[in-house]
Amino acid sequence: MAARGEGVWWAPRRGGWWIGVLFAIGSTCFLVGPIPGLVELVGSEIDALIFFVGSIFFTSAAALQLLQSTRAGWFSTDWWASAIQFVGTLYFNVDTFRALQQGLDATEYDRLVWTPDTIGSACFLVSGFLAYGLVRGRGRTLDWKIGAVNLVGCIAFGISALAAFWVPTNGSIVHLAAANFFTAFGGLCFLVGAVLLLPLSARQASSAR
Image 1 (tube, rainbow, N blue to C red):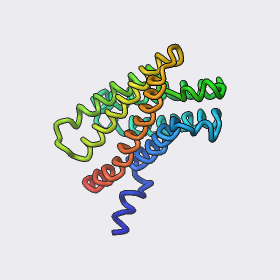
Image 2: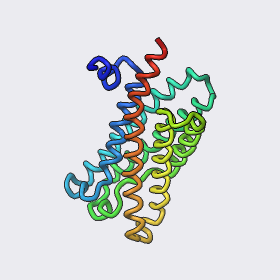
Image 3: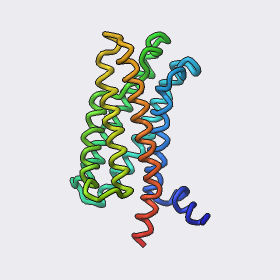
C-alpha cells in the first residue's frame, strides 16, 4: 500500500508528476492571493509577490506540458491546447510582474487585488475548451474530470478579468467582490485539476509498462 502511495504522490522521475506538482503550487498562490484580509496581514508587496511566484510555477508546468504534448504530434489538438495555455501563462508573468513593480498603494490594493490579464484569460479559455474537447466523449473518467474542472477554472478567470473592467472606474462593490472571488475560485479549480493529474500520470505510467 505504501509503495502504491509513493507511486502516486511521490514520483519525481515522472514528467506528469512534475506538471501536477508545479500547477498545484501555482494554483495555491492564485487561490490564496485574493483572500479578503490577506493584503492587510502581509502587505501589498508580499501579496503581489504571491501572484508573481504563482505565475512562474504556472509557466514552468505549462512548459513541461507543452513539451509532453509533442508526443501526440506537432500541431495536434493536444499541442495547440498546451501551446495556447503556455502563451497565456506568459501574459500572466508580465501582468503580475508589472503589478509587483508598480507597487500599488494600500488603498488601491485593498480595493482590488490582482485580476487575470484579459489576453491571458482568453488564451486560457481557448486552451480549456480545446483540452475539454479531447476528453468530452470519454465518460466520467479521471481525464474528463481534469478537463472539466480546468475549463471551469478558465471560465472563472475570464469572469474575473471582465469584472475588473468596471474596477476602479465604477467601483461597484459587486464588481470588486466578483473579481476577487472568481480569481480565487479559478485558482481552486486549477488546484483540484492539478492534484488529479498525479493519479492520472501514475495510471498512464503503469499502462505504458
